[in-house]
Length: 300
Image (cartoon, rainbow, N blue to C red; front, side, top):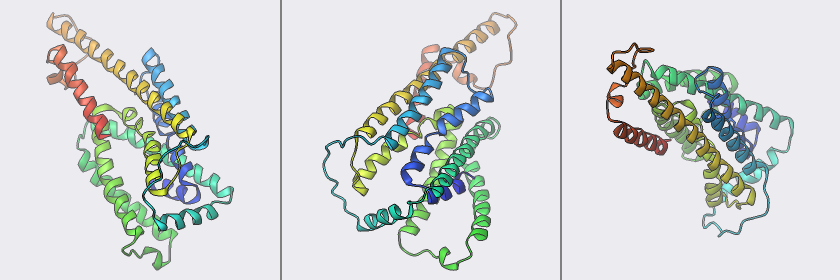
């Protein structure tokens, strides 16, 4: 559902609009996890996560819809005639208004499907912590579903032909990188740090698009992009700070539980399976948590 909605929505919309709407994913994910009581929101850390999510969305929208004056930069040394022809054709094809509304709606629907997958993956990792196996199973099921939809929607045999051109490169990249490597890495990160932590890195896409767009498409960087990037970075670290406070509160509660068990006092509940980490001294446990957060951040 995520990929079908997104690619069809991208067809009827503009890449900039689709990229901006993609950044509603953290807000959608946080709203769903908060509704399902997977993320605490009552404490100050929870309010920080809400504020950080809002800042990320505002920054993403600023980068796309507020252009502002140009920022003086060097001209890109890359000149690709194919890209220039394609951008001219897209500008003519996106002249209508009804198609843009349909495209935006489908992109938002793809974000909802993606957020639901984050939550399902987190629940499943508790009992089946095999991100690579689940990636293979999910890709196989998605291939069957997409194949059925494609056969029903496209009857021209010429549309299925692939030559040594950009269509082949795009198909291979979407399959190998976007649907293979990315999903496997994201599944591992969700297992380690949770769905909201992973989804908060999606606004970084607009920053990457701005840099790559300047290099390949020759797009100019504007003040709106710079301001939006600042909002995104501040919002991102605000949410991560809130997540860090939640981790500290969880570790404190676990330490209190261990003290009760060690002193023979009745505990409030059973201790879960992470005994190796909790059996370490507090300083070592903090270092392990920081190292795990850093590793997952780089992978995300």
